[in-house]
Amino acid sequence: MVNLGGLQRGDYAAKTTQVFGEVGHHFAFAAGALEPFANIAYVHVDGGINELGVAAVTGSATIATTYTTLGVRGAAALTDTLTARGTLGWRHALGDITPVAALAFQSGGAAFTLAGSPIARDALVTEAGLTLAVAPKRFAGCFLDWPARRPQPRQCRQRQF
Image 1: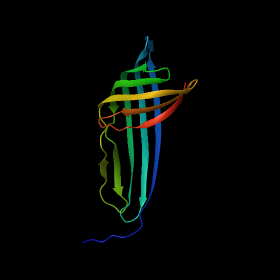
Image 2: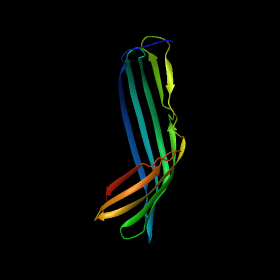
Image 3: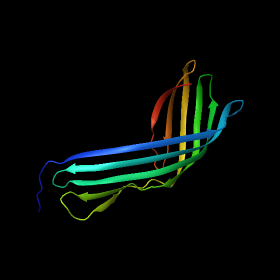
């Protein structure tokens, strides 16, 4: 049995760049609306790892991914103040889909690569929710969205239009 003891400390620095754009067209109907849309997002994360201690590692991690989404949003008035909203789309990831860190122990030895869980190359994007008009041009809403392969209820939010 090996017994290692000591204080571990680390310094982690990451820089993130994000660019996003979207186009869509709104079609209004008697009881609701539809909006087909297409968007593109570029995300670049560049980070450094510098630890101190017995098992300290140093290295860097970079991931650059472009996401495109094609879909449709819809809304239907249920009452004068309550509206049902939904989104259905397909998201495609281009570029790096597996986060990778190039690391080495500071005490020496061969460098190694550590890979994280990959993101889905293709994913279903869904959102369903309700908005309630609480005042003129003020809405409170609660939405559930599933941006990937595993459902994760995400947020309730208030919007001002």
